[in-house]
Length: 203
Image (cartoon, rainbow, N blue to C red; front, side, top):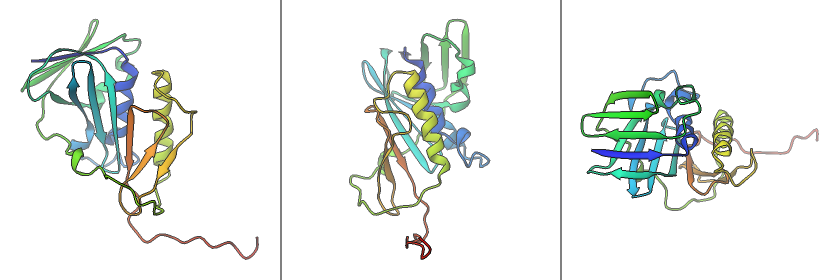
């Protein structure tokens, strides 16, 4: 049995924005993209990872690991991480084994069956970037602003709201820096020929 306690609840709840349930492409139904993966790193830290197939977010979240067994990872349905379910919750306890998982805070409890098809995120994170320009779906930057607001609530944002740095990578995944050292964001560009800029003749 694995058992962890997360005190900074807003950090975990922010991960829901990376899933398909909050995506510009939410009408698609791809079950693998409707979960947040939680992995135990050590006795006081977990890694949370989620994606909708275009944007991927990873976050290092402080916690208390009270019990651990292998594999120390679980996928939580994003629908169980909506703020209305955990309003004013001072902590979340997550307990799981090979067949079931419980999320608990005070008198609120959600139970669901575990799934084994974990997100294989390690294989797609680039080691370097090319700095070649890329084009993106602008709706993802509205999503990133929502994530920044959640992190500000959690007191985990070092930069100002709306301050975003893009490490361009051509037609490969670009890295988005939002000014939070414990957050990693990767965004896929539009995969078609880039539109070159030329100054309009009338300017």
